[in-house]
Length: 576
Image (cartoon, rainbow, N blue to C red; front, side):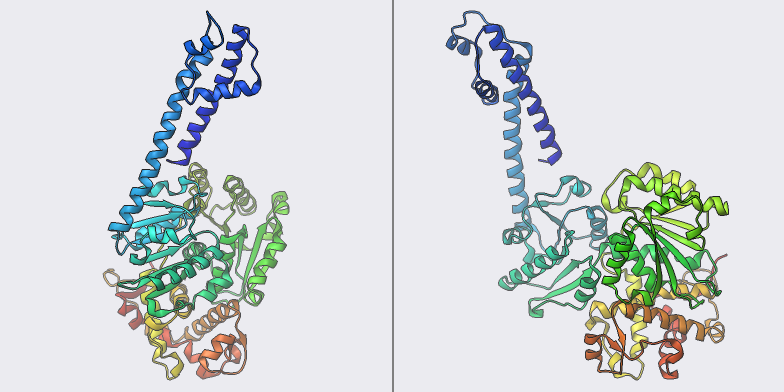
């Protein structure tokens, strides 16, 4: 039975108990009999066990005449029914749990098993259903996790227990599953679950391969596990790493890039602000640092607003020690922000992200930001303020009523629901075409088939693919389906006068990603050793690159028409 119903039943039982206790006190007072507290408690508990029958009880007490107080009468009539209902509910719950387990073990094949039904559940399960629409879904959750977080997906079997217990692997028929998603909110638990599943599958005979998606939120662990393919490939496990917060951050950063509403080709440094540097906020900073590279060739400036903000920035720099070489990061303490009457410290900000984890305070924070900027600019459009809608992944209803009001004062809302936990097909198709272009370069170390690459190196091409839309926008172009009625742009005629600028932008983007992942400059090494040590000869400014190395940043641009043609797209002028 749902936890909420048990709580309601418990509250009713407690109320009946109180009525019974005071009813007994009144009863014995009327009877002129003394009764100890222990005796009163025992008599009250007896109401729930059908042990109290008043005529017989009165005879024992030698009461020829007695009066039952109203509250005791209510308690003695109601209490047995509470007991009966609880017993029936308990039996039904056990039977339902057994039936669910039996159904899954007997009839589920090639299904999806999701470990972890927590605050990211609503968002995550939407992604899973979008990824595997025709597959049966089984949810596994710890008994301590509130049931309400899975209410949206009640049609799916929910198995409750200790996720690290081997029995739960048997119950969920995990050796017959096609996809397994390890998505508790604890990275260490997810890693232990992966090891348990690998050992379990080694002992079981399997008919086909199993795809495992491992949720990791810590950036260092996330990047490390990007190259992990399982301890024993012979058992047919294909391991991939994802982060719910990284997916949210990536879509938000791409959807609200500053080049869509301000000029980014001048010499002015682009500045964004971030309110809240918890898990999602950290990913927003890291995604922006890797993606926001424009024709002005300036480092991005990021202003972070939070309580204990300097300590949180130090925590971020411990994760990415070279981040300061990619962006300029500064802080504003929450109290200082709340006391502001004018946005002097934020005067150059063109884009604000709100990732504040305390839902009940978001309305106030959003208004405060808009008040500050409106007082100085009297404009509801600039800077762009983007609320990353926490209700989309925390299942909260608190923000629902406020969103329309916030939109009216120029607060945009990023609701990253339905994103694939896998990389979106279009992005992967484009990334694969980019890799194929690079593979045709003379360097032998680039000749690796897409299907054989680890997710880490696939990501190298995915970030390049995501950034292409920004490069095209800088030329007044966009990629659309070949069905679009607009005539294709003559990209080969447009490129020559812009190719050196775009190539330098691409190098800056590539360099930022390498630095964030801990690469340093050094002599040229064998590819495998290079990436194990994270030493790369090209970790240096554009001006120091040879012409041969600069050509690498031009090769995709010079083949861009064919790259988009391969995925059914063409390049056209932007709609005004």
